[in-house]
Length: 91
Image (tube, rainbow, N blue to C red; front, side, top):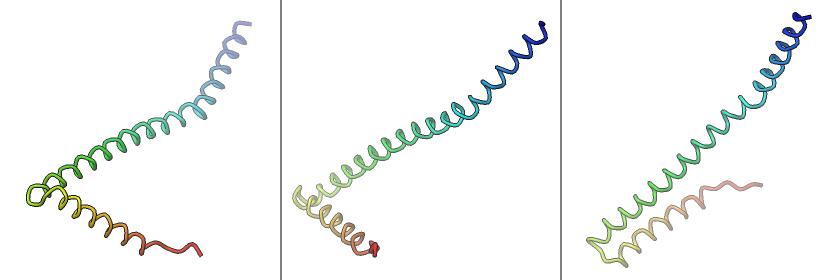
């Protein structure tokens, strides 16, 4: 009788391990990648903001504030126009 109890306990443990392998182990990888992706996106956004701020400050020294805004505005308009004309039509 004791043999059946240990075999049944092993059977239940095996089922629990299979279910965990199919659910929790797979999802834990995606959760880890999602968390790291959020951290990378936040760091990338912060870096781009500080880089833009530094470029604006560097342009503000030889030019005035209005000149720095004009140069950065022209750059953004040129990049936007380039991306607009490079787009593909969906038809």
